[in-house]
Length: 474
Image (cartoon, rainbow, N blue to C red; front, side, top):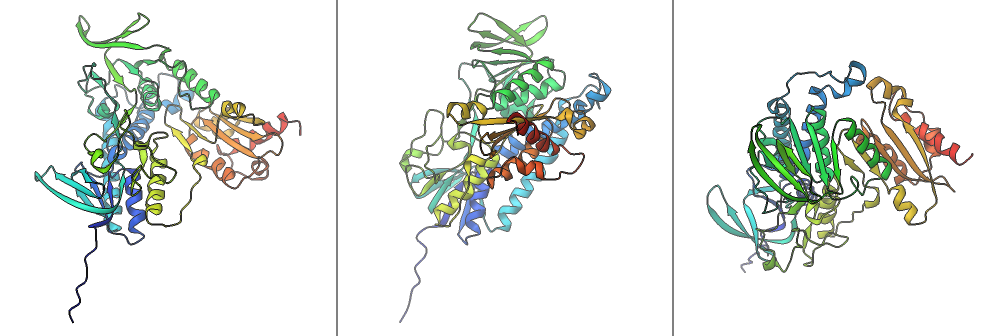
């Protein structure tokens, strides 16, 4: 008797569209469960926006700025100190290009090592289980099927069709790496995370920056005290704030000073600047996915709604990362990818979203875990705070950061830690100590009883804990 073995009903158990942090983690998680996995990436290199134009380039650029400008040493050697005079974009991008190449190679190696097939193509839905692959290099198309699909296509900088973008004089954050030279003046339109990060970087290089936003304060989701401190530091670096102002028009002009950009504000003010960075948010890369064929519809910013397991309206199709909106961080995208893949194949996995840390790589950097004072007040939760300033800590003096601040928020009744907010050097590293204590439900007494290396910035936790206890009169 001849026995014929039936072929699998789908080409893949999981097809991931997008190779950024969320897509990588989803693919590797499924591969570790012995699933047949492929990642579809429209670009010739893997890593998505995070590696190629977003997180990695911007943070590497920041490190280059901090080093070459001598920013960290100015407390000792004066405001005019710099490691290199006449810093160029070429100087800044030398370091950035090296890191990007390394991260692309690491990402590709991780996928290959876990037996994940990488397909270089544009992916779009034929139906909810079928994807058409357009191979731009060979100009061919084919279709593949998958039992489960995870969309991790990320976002692109939002562009207004009325603005004459040219990528050099009027540009978005995606164009930063293509700038030919550092401008003398720069207007940044949009004071979100990306806008604030780039405004602070260029200001550290001596560029005269004007920051425009129609909201009355920077970063509304950040604790007020930290946002106010960042505002102060930006102004100290000669950044002009135009908050509560709406842009009514942007145009390129030529005058005796050469090619410039004129920005008209609704209030009647005008800003003349050499270059303008337009940073009013990001739009999901969904326009070429043919979502309707799968029974899906994106919102007006190209984003998809998901449930707590990252399932879209079509249960076997998941979406993760920037595509689903806030917080749009590489770290949270990775976790979302892992959880989505685990849920797709009934693997038990858990996470604590309320303990996800946030890192904002402005100069100085900001990091936080847990809610802000304003949110606790609105919810009627009794709390007290404890603060430590870097200038009180030997390490703060050694590194020349006398303006950093660490703030603990804790329950005033049982002293249980509720949140940590930090601004200053190393904030995004330092935050993880507080994150760990929050995870095991600890009190601020943990910091008092713990011995920290000396001299380190971690001592701020002990100093802040003592300050908090003094405030409640214990």
